[in-house]
Length: 396
Image (cartoon, rainbow, N blue to C red; front, side, top):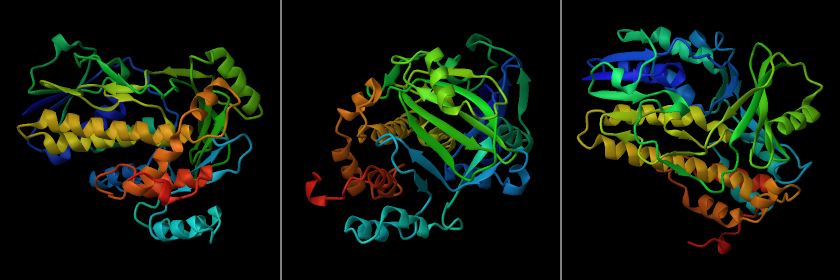
């Protein structure tokens, strides 16, 4: 089998590395443009990134220093329920959480006592902050026996292959049918990002603001990837910069703002004939909960599993769509349980009923193999928003 991967960066090189390891007989050609600038802001991840590197036999000590990596123990959220609420750390706690949550629901323990359960040596007890630009370089160094071409190509100029993998990002230069499925209540569509210098922290930070939220992702070399994600229909880029600086003007900035924009949603058909989209080419919801790299890994692994199956297109599309929709659902609940109504952005979400469905997710999403976000992940939201776990009120 001959495969063309069009596009480098994280999507292209991680796809190449994983396919090479798991399909040694496949002939792989990676074509990337020499003119695309790499963005090296700090990126927050979920624990499956750790497992992905382990599957590629790339030990942590071989990459964490060059990627300015930090072991991430959680994500501290503030100002999503109401302005001035208590910061709460969404930590990677698995063992003992269900028992603790039952006690919490009965009022026997306070919400902060869950921190006592944290064990970094537990199953996937931590994730990472990484410089994503360096993370794909590491995989590139470990990926051998592929043909690498530096060129800007169109679909008509591609070398002959049995399969073309579109890793060209939101531009989607290779996939033909670009019809999107969008999520009507996902309002965040723009991000202004920059870097600052500050002491390292082993957790991410997300702070609710007037029309979205600020984020901070700390790297080991004291660089911090930071910025403001927001709803551009309610706030201009210039006003977003002003709001961001009003809240962060005291910090030591290393770079100016860079603007990123996207249409929240996914392709209706990620695999079409002999072309399959991977990474941002499939789509993007928004940055909440570090879902970008997690979605990428899920797509790469799914592609690898179905590559030689006769109904591969159908399986891939079903799996990718299911996980994308789960991500959108989880993100939606971050907003739809709010008590805020101080701006038009938060008022939109305050008028939605996220509490009912949140409790349904806690009750029903118990199968770890079937759900990207199992019950305990939704339970964290209930804890943060002060939603009681009243099972009698949950429709079965």
